[in-house]
Image (cartoon, rainbow, N blue to C red; front, side, top):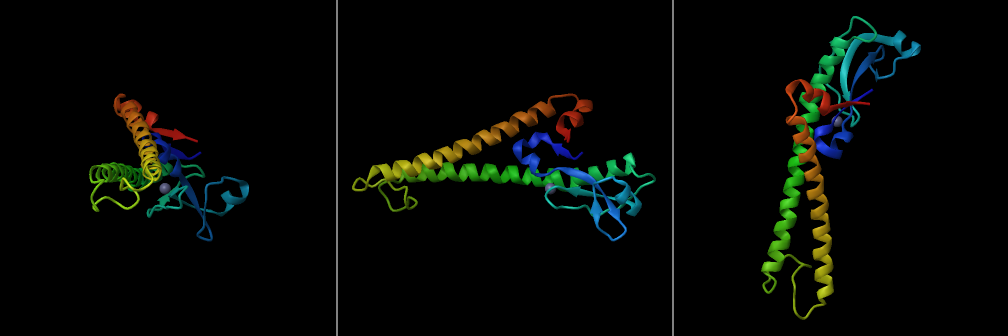
Length: 174
Ligand SMILES: [Zn+2]
């Protein structure tokens, strides 16, 4: 019943948005049952599986008010999901660049003290240790690059489709 933005790779699944109904004690629910329906005060609020909730309360005219729910989901998408996912993506790029820089520096400056600890390739030390560290950093960087590659793939699938199809392809109802 929630909505997921699929153009941000696996990270999108951490943020499933849904319109939540406000109950008479101020709590919220996404469940429509006889019990909850009797306690709904006629307002919906945007909510996310990560715990985020919107700030606007949208008045409803029916138990399921498509227009009010749509407004709440627009708030979720533009005030929360997209900004958070774009920030996460930027952080992943930064992390990848930092790892590659660290590897480059360590191997370039292998005979100086400038190289980061552990990676410095000293002739008198066991090369296996330095190579293990290098391999572990490389595999983490590879994983991250694959993740970002998947996001870029999903993103181009969305943006290359006509505008009318964009929303449908970018969002998945669960
Ligand atoms: Zn969220």
